[in-house]
Length: 344
Image 1: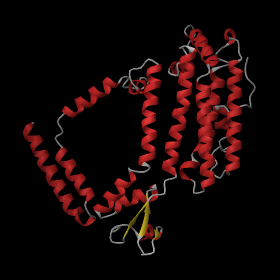
Image 2: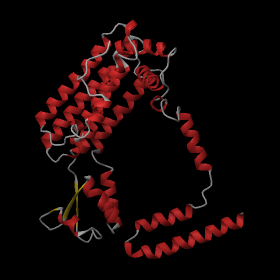
Image 3: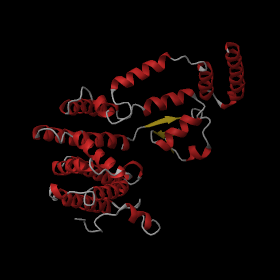
Image 4: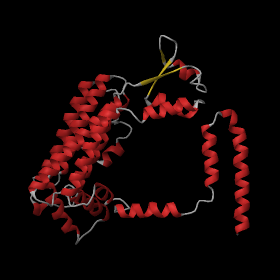
């Protein structure tokens, strides 16, 4: 059994229609974001429902992996236009609609990732692939089975329900954490002298107080240029402190909840910590390997540490001192090269 074409776009369809079809649109209105979100969820859910309705005995490479791969491609490429505006759009209504879309899609992520009917069919097809493996399809299927096990789909119903409930709460709190940062309106007030080194075009783009001073927000277009080009170290210090203290009180409470909830999920799934749960599918595999690597790295001698220190200090000084610091860096390099040659 093969599913009819047209429900989702396949990889081949997307590549062939590259010039005539572009899913990336950044001009959606709040209503369009809501409509496209609901349509996307319904479209992807239908594919999962179709696959989930197959008899386990009839599941094959032709009617399952390709359908899921195409659905995942469609979902990933379509989701970007829905949840990305919350970070960049100047219109608050669009940002709010994008945040709500992100919340709805994240809940949908949890739902489709914890479908036991899909997991059973993946396990059945994985056994069939042991006799007649196809490298790409087997790798994709093995990955889906691993992700299903990491959601607890091989465990009891009670554990599955608790993991699902906790995962949704983690998702909601994470979105709330990001929304607080996105909507933060904190600003610092500086004089023209305190903003020395910044271009006139930067200063002209800043709002001013009644006293004629400049309002600098903690948004990226204000923060990064200031940290790179401002000559005044005290201004950079104030900006850095404020930037890393955004929403400190409200987000600290959220972060404390997230730490507890992630530890709870790890414990339910049989892991000793959230770190071990996260690292299992990465190269490190285990938190102990990471600790060992860091410990070993700290013991390795670094002959050029003094050079790095001079370069770091030079970068924090005004531009007028850069030529002098460059001379010092070159001298240090020459000295270290002589030391290395002498040691050899």
